[in-house]
Image (cartoon, rainbow over all chains, first blue to last red):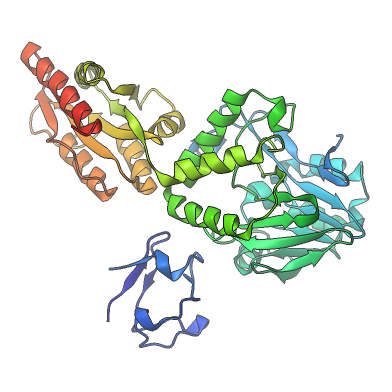
Length: 52
Length: 397
C-alpha cells in the first residue's frame, strides 16, 4: 500500500497506521479513505495529496 | 481613539502600526508599516471580529470603549490564531469574561496553545451561522489560507466579507479605504503580501476563489485584517489574486545574485545585456544589498529566474543561500531558471544553486555558467550569450 504526502504541509498518510483519531482504521489504503477526510495537520482536502 | 464606521453599526476598531519594519520574525520587510484591523458589529448582540497585536491591546480597547463598554461584548470571532490578530484576546477577555470566542477546531487548539486561556469557545464549521439580531454571520473554513485554523466570516445583510489575512496589505496610512489611498502603493503592497506569504498556497487559493464564486455571494465590501478596506472596487483585489494564483508569469527575468569581489556581479551585468538584446524585460538585484521581500515581489510575475553566486567554502555565499531557501518554499510553477557564478579553484556554488532550483521543482533551462576569477573579454561575451540564450527561451524560442 502506497504512502501519500500532503503537498501543502508535508504530512505523510501511512496506510499501515491510518488516522484513527479521525475515523480511519489502520490498514486503510489511501484510495479507500473517504473524500470528506482532510489532512489532520493542516486541514486541506484529499486532492492535495500525492503518492510518495 | 475614534473608531471608523464602515457600514451602519459596523466599526473599524483596529490600530495602525506605523513603525513595524520586520514581520514574521525577519522574513518579511514591512517598509510601509501595517495595520491590525479588528471590527466591531453592534446589533442586538455585540460582536468583535478579530483583535490586534498584543502590544496594541489598550488602543483597540479604547476605540471599542468609544462605542460600547467592552464588558457588553457577546461574541468574539477569531478568524485566525496568529498573534498579530489574537494577541489582544487575553487583555480583552479580562474585560468580557462571559464572551464566547468562535473559530475553527484548529483555532480552538491554537489559541489555547498560545494563551492557555479558560475561555468559552464555540467551534464553527463552513456554513454555520451566528445570529446577531438584524444581521447574521456565516463562516467559511479556509484551511491553509494561510494557516490550518484560518476562516472567512461573511455578513450577508451587509454584503461584507471579513477574510482576515486574505486580500490584506502591510500598509500603514491615515485613511482606511481603497478609494482614499495611492493606488500604486496599495497594489504594490497587496502584491508584496501575496508573493511573500501566499505564493506557495496558490493552488488552494484558486480553489477557494472558485468555491466562493459558485456560492454567488453578493460582496460590496472586503475588510481584511491588514491594511486598506476594499469598498470602491472589492473585485479588483479578487481578480488580482486570481491572476497571481494562476501563475501565468510575464516574459520577464529576475537576476538575483551575491558577489565577493565583483566578478559574479560583472557576469550578472553582462548577462543582463544579453537579456536586453533578446528583448526581455529584466531586473537585477544583489540580494546581499537589496531587501529580499522586494526581490520576491518582483519574481511573482517573472517567468525567468537567474541565480548567481561566487564560490565560498565550496558553496554559495550566505545571503543568496538563504534567499534560495525562501524561493524553494514558494514552489514556483511555470518558470525557467539558470545558474552562474565566479570561482577561484574547485568551484561549487553553481552546483549548489542547481540543486536548490531542482528542489524547488524547476529544471535548469540551460547549462550553468561558471568562470574562474575575473571574466575576460571572451568570457564576458559568453555571459552575454548566456543572457541572449536564456532570453530566447523565455520568449519561447
